[in-house]
Image (cartoon, rainbow, N blue to C red; front, side, top):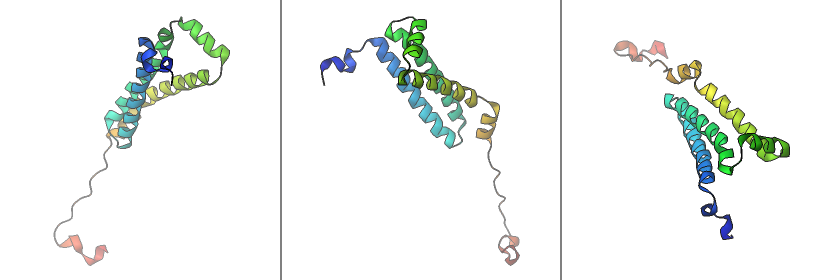
Length: 130
């Protein structure tokens, strides 16, 4: 691979933007895993990851060095996958941000099933319970 295509050849703002996308992806992945295990911190991590993704998306024009209006115009004028993935990222990040901080989400994550009562004494193993 030629040396012109290495990460070291990229400007610092581009590397910061790529690190923002990578950080957002990792935080979103950790948040999704924590939410599967019904941890309240999972919803908070999902919210933080969505904010990081939106922040990385908004700082992308600055990393390229063009005004945001011109960047958006170029994205929608030329179309293609570059526009589609950014629009999908913006929409999904806002959706995750809203859904992560809704009260029913926290109510679901904080709910604990009641423990079964412990039976003791003569009634614990009666033949009638079989």
